[in-house]
Image (cartoon, rainbow, N blue to C red; front, top):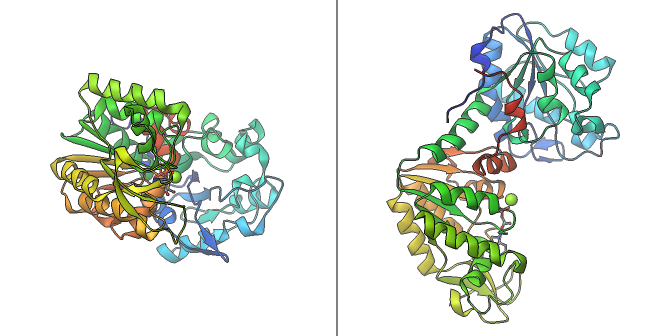
Amino acid sequence: MAFTKKTVRDIDVAGKRVLMRVDFNVPLKDGVVTDDTRVRAAIPTIQYLKEHNAGIVLMSHLGRPKGDGPEPELSLRPAADKLAELTGYDVKFVDDTYGEKAAEAVAAVKPGDILVLENVRFLKAEKKNEPEVAERLASYGDVFVLDAFGTAHRAQGSVVGPAAHIPAVAGFLLEKEVDTLTSIFAEPERPFVAIVGGSKVSSKIGVLDHLIDSADTLVIGGGMAYTFFLAKGYKTVGTSLQEPDWIERAAEMLRKAEERGCKILLPVDNVVTDHFGEDAEGEVVASDSIPEDRMGMDIGPKTVELYCEAVKAAKTVFWNGPMGVFEIEQFSKGTEAVARAIAASDCTSIIGGGDSVAAINKFGLADKMSWISTGGGASMELVEGKALPGVEALLDA
Ligand code: ADP
Ligand code: MG
């Protein structure tokens, strides 16, 4: 499946005012952007619009405001400053989104100008996509561009609202994300190895379900492995993360994989400890004999070898979810080894999910991957085979 919606390439933006929803939901510390990945990701579309002589009005959410009015620590001004710094463009900012002040600033936007509006979520009605929000925002542009992949799975005012009033198309980031995350499942170069970890089976069930349909091998690690151990009939997983209510579903997954000819790899050994903490010491035990008073924190060395072999054999790798508690140094080895194996391979490698991406960045391997998704929840919904409301609302190509 390729991208089936119109993009900025398909419309004439010259001399028009373009309202664009970006994902500038960046981490801040003392009013400074600490990770500018999301701002960088929006630049190609902004550059294109500017070069094609459009006046650009940018809007985004940032953090989780209460929605009852301005919260200075969640202002988008630092993100606007970061955009100016990264591009060298003159970027204006207005500390208003829906009021007269914003409308006046928008009216002053001329071709080639860039204006950033204040946090769209300082108003509750935005999240609920109430009609007055959509109408107000749509009045700011002749055309609407959605490039906020990270929020494209949410039917909120600034994501889907303007499309009901003005022509709506995709930006380059949205197009590339959707294209990448759907086409690998439609026509992966084989062998296609999917690696899923993270904390819970319950939060990844849709992802696992869909991957079993398309992957040749499904590699399971992280906290969810322990529920799979119980599904396989191991008597105990000690004090490891486990979801008793999901054992039956996990068993069903294993049966389904067998029917579909999808090979499932589960850990054969684990690094366990007696308590969860920075000072915890690890020891390696076989996965089927985890002591009652121990919790699994990482995959063990034999498992690492097995998983790296699978990666080596792959032509396509999709990875979501760390192999262990990678935030704690002594339990990050499994995640790091798998990340390094993917980085060393010349396979097509696609990484999705907030913590997996954080892990890759921590190991400094980001530029070795084919594609790192900027959207956690949105990328998971695509991998589950769901349509994203933001994308659905755009004009068909
Ligand atoms: P992503 O954000 O990449 O989709 P998740 O949010 O599903 O990943 O899971 C990430 C979290 O899973 C990390 O905080 C990590 O510490 C945790 N995790 C991984 N392995 C274990 C484990 N064995 N026990 C407890 N938590 C784990
Ligand atoms: Mg996460």
